[in-house]
Length: 223
Image (cartoon, rainbow, N blue to C red; front, side, top):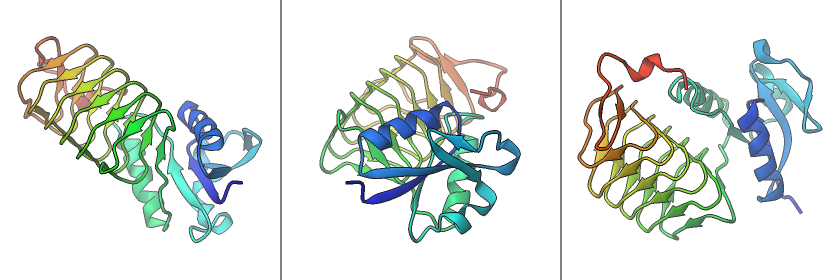
């Protein structure tokens, strides 16, 4: 029996996916979706109501309901981050989902509003901040730190003792060697190899080994 109630903030593709995982692989019952009123197009989704975010706490008080912000990497994770803070300001506890088909070691530190899909391996002593998405099939090596608001796509290999800067986006099949890092607000293109630390902020990196894409800012890319 489901003993916890959840409102999903968002009504797009990721929100629909989150509904499936929370409904069929967690202790949560999803009771509603919520979006800002200007984006409210449908009154129902997945047979539950879609309600305005502006008045969410009146219908679903945070004393009785948890929330999950189901927004992808839009505008370099800024949209998800903004809604995360708005939900916190309303008093909501932000749920974290870990797939029953993921391996997460017992001493991993995991923040709020994280979503860990199937076939992720998260090794001992890893620290994952708030509002992080690990799509399917990634390897997160021991003693690595993933800062807040990061989006890791699929089949990314992050070796041991790495540091992933806040709000980064890591493309499919990208790789970090041991003891490497990437600065905040960066995009790492698919298939790239980080074999030494990348210290810039707001940069786009690509290639093997990864190098900066000159004259283009990560902030100009709408993921």
